[in-house]
Image 1 (cartoon, rainbow, N blue to C red):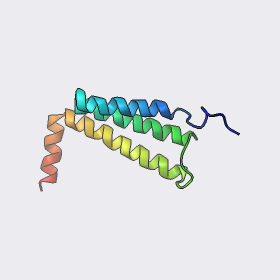
Image 2: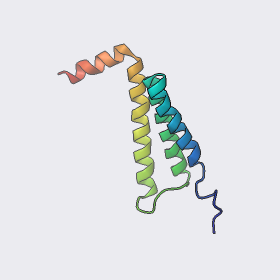
Image 3: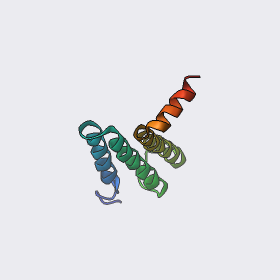
Image 4: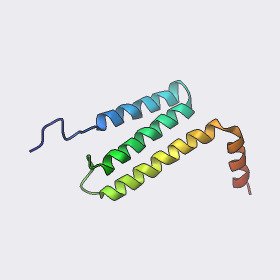
Length: 96
């Protein structure tokens, strides 16, 4: 039988990081908020890989890949928003 605090594990920390990220998006700067939110999601992927939490309907592999890719895309997008030259280059590639 598991203790009541053990079932949550470190996920309240990930939730706090996500809340801080969303607050930064709305209150300070979307670039920093997206970076913090993506980092929190990648921490969740690392924790899932280490064996914490998860639902019985999905495999650990599915969770780690999905969270890792989503977190990486959030971080990459926030970095692209911060760099006008890179943003212009990507937009010119998409305009073709």
